[in-house]
Structure formats: C-alpha cells, structure tokens
Length: 187
Image 1 (tube, rainbow, N blue to C red):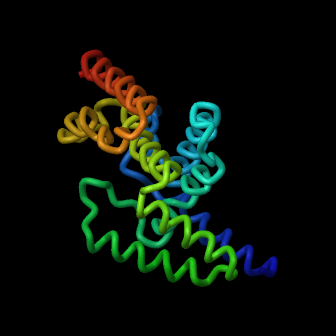
Image 2: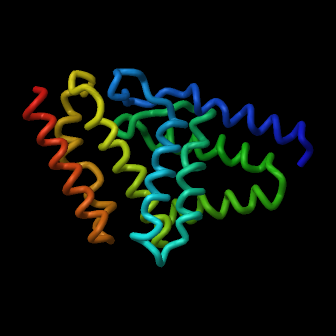
C-alpha cells in the first residue's frame, strides 16, 4: 500500500466521525458512529482479564470495523433497518473491502464472516458489547431524547446476546437497574 492509497482509506473511514447515530450524549449532542465504535472497543479492552480465554485484540478489531459499511449508508436505527438496508450496506462494504490490499482485505473479510456467523466467543462478546453500549448510551442520555418505544426497548434489548455468559448477563441486569432508576427519577 502506498502512502497515497493509505490516505484515501483514512479519508473514507473518517466519514464515521461525521455519521450521526440515533443516540445523544449526556450533553444532548448527537453521537457519531466513530464514538460508538471507540467505546465498544474500550469496553472490550476492559474485559481482558474477565475473559482471559478470549483473544481480546480480535474482539477490539471487530468493534473498530463493525460499522464501516455506515461510511456509505449512514446509520439506520435497529428498529428501522430493513433486510434491504442490510444487504445494501453489506454490498457497499464488500466493494470497499475489495479495494484494500489483498492481505488486509482477506483479514477484514474473515472478521466480518466471523462476526456474521457469531459462533466464536470473540464474535459473541463483540455482538453483546455492540448492543449493550447502545442501551448504556441511552441510559446516559437525557430521557426526553427517548422515543416512546425506547422505554420498552431499554428494558428488553440485548438480553438474548448475553445468555452465553453469566458475567455479561449480570452486566445486562445492572444496566436494566440503571434504566429503571433513570425512568423513575427523570420521567
């Protein structure tokens, strides 16, 4: 890869810094996709000792790349995203990955395939953190930024993806306690 090729890639991925998510921060600022990806990567790093049998560096790589397709499509909230949206994002992501140097392209395709299959412990942890971070972020945001259906979503979302781990299940329970406290105090 030449420095010019490298810069072209860096300019493309910069889009995630300006791609808004359906979330606001505690200061009521719209969160970017890059901020979400950064935080789940940090959440993974913090679990290195908790999941000592797992390749946390791989989990972090999954966290960092998982929303690259949104450079091309933007972020579509989970409750609005259709199969057609997912297919379009996957198609555009594939086009982008195929422009990368061969080994990098192969490595990233392999990570995406592993994330999609969601069979490895690394992929399961990534998926759990991705979903849990969204719930945590909503808990940190002002409650007046929540849509009506998000009260139910906050109470039920992501329990299915933590079932494989007692630790992550306990984390989800703690997040639910924060949700209930927030609703009681701010509604």
